[in-house]
Length: 178
Length: 207
Image (cartoon, rainbow over the protein chains, first blue to last red):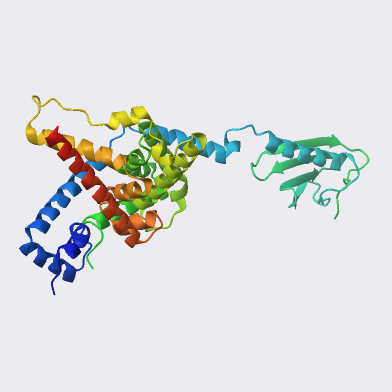
């Protein structure tokens, strides 16, 4: 099988780009061997191809890495504004919890189950986790009528509030259950 | 069927994937290495498509900033260069659309008069340069100007094709089109460049 000039010229682009299968390459090669006009056309196309390839790349006037880093930092800040912002919302939340814990001792409203060990007479503590608020109330009962309470924030491990009060009337603790 | 990738493409891809993996494992220097490996290609793509140095710098930086966010969670085996090119092409198109809506002329005509003038061929001093080097330099300038004057759909194809080591498949994937479409656009772009060069050569001889 042979191909003519028109078909060969249609295939020349794929030929120089190495996109033809072996059978078509053979057909083009056979035609080129006998056609000076198509040989001249492929030389011209290859020259153009080389010039295009060498023209395509442009170097930036400066290294753009600094620009990239600046944008990455900007994107991070936009994504996590709390990482650089004030901690007010977190502490506002913690303050609310602390106030609630203090009220639980001042008012006869049990917010946490307390446990005491009368037999040993020592100060014991019992922790009850309030899963809904993510805080733990730790209450202590001592024979000296001193009741202590501390409120922990699980996330930070910080003592958010502590309470120590003398309670002459209620040495068993308002919220204590045995 | 002959291979549609140039030799060395697979090893480059493997290198990229290793760098990507190192970066995903916490080695920040690997991302910087990827950046310096592809900065020029992404810039060249953006420069050819936008015809503006400033826009090309902006798009290059934005492409890599987006890569920093998006490639962190990309699967192992992802091909970095086509990903970067796809983002850069989309940013160039977005910029073109924004400019079109701001100005009254089309995306294709966004280059300013001064930009076009800067692309025009300057007549070199014949007494200063060797003939071969002169012809080569002149021809490059002529081809560069001719590429920039191609319509978008031809310019995108020809620029991506050459910047991607002549991969028809990857060019088609980036532009979300068929390989047949890429081939025909490439062929037309080459014809246009060839006739532009012939006009130049004819004009030079007669002038």
